Amino acid sequence: MSEAIVDSVSNHSGSSILASAADPEKRKILDEIEALGLTEKLLELEVQGFAVIPGVLSEDRIERAKAAILRRAEKVTGREIDPESATTEDFNGMQYQHYLIFDDPVFQEILLEPKPLALVQYLLGADCVLSSMGSHLRGPGGLPLAVHVDGMPDGCLSSVAMIANCNYALTPYTQDQGALMLFPGSQHKQRQPTPAENWMAGSETLPEIMAKQLPPEELDSLEWTAPAGGITMELQPGDAVVWHGNSWHGGWRREQAGTRINLAAYFCREFMTTQELRGDTRYPEVFERYANDPRFAQLMGENRFNGWRDEGPNLERVSLVQAKNAEEN
Ligand SMILES: O=C(O)CCC(=O)C(=O)O
Image 1 (cartoon, rainbow, N blue to C red):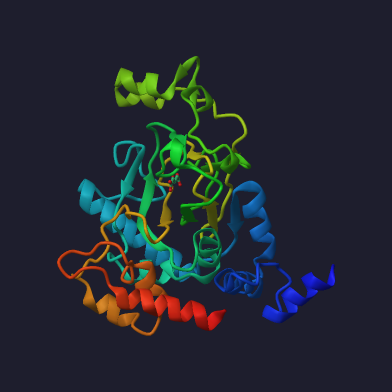
Image 2 (cartoon, rainbow, N blue to C red):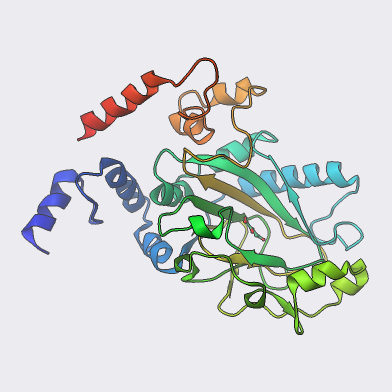
């Protein structure tokens, strides 16, 4: 190691991960990653475009999150859903359960899980915000989930992440149980997969099958071939996968009775429009609960600069940020 490099490390922290001395925000995030024992995970994220962090959630959080998601789904469908034995009649295919953050305190707790958050902040900066939190709840049958890139049109993708996703397994993930699939290295492609690179039923593409509007029994009996290069995420409840927003991902159709339950926390850079409309004033008690943890208000978009009306831009906030940067430099 050259002297210049040793100096830049020893001047800024005890961390062995390098960062430009001119970027104190990144330095702080890298120190946090090292302190949390995630240096190898950072390497996985950089090389593969995703990283699996085992055992993030406690048993208690897994059970509370699962119960809250099932409560929501039962309210929507009007049917009881047994996650061990639900049939296609009870819950067929994948149905997204949206805007969970205020449904139960457990979702706010999970938002602040330090390990996934450290990798998300590495990708998007410490000022990133929660774009949405929902569950891709998957019963038996239906379609596999098309392989896709999250939320950005092809022309806008670059090596710099604009989006990062954290997917928590709340039930076991295997191929037959409807696991998530990720494509190592796909973050470099900077485009969506074509239909021919996606799931195929014989010689037919996913859009061709969808256009046929087959009755459920016929759809459920189709044989699907997974896209080349995908890795099935074999996960245990409580494990989390964090990925760069460019990374291709999709999901297997569930072949077994019961439901595959995830929690998807989806983040974006602060200047972007979030999927869920932030600034919800109906839950002051939630913001009060986290008054002493500035990460919560930040993630919930309370500090965003854009979005003014008659009151105009908050220049005080700009000065605060500039003062903070000057202090750190
Ligand atoms: O977990 C899954 O099945 C897929 C999740 C997904 O596609 C997403 O979060 O964008």
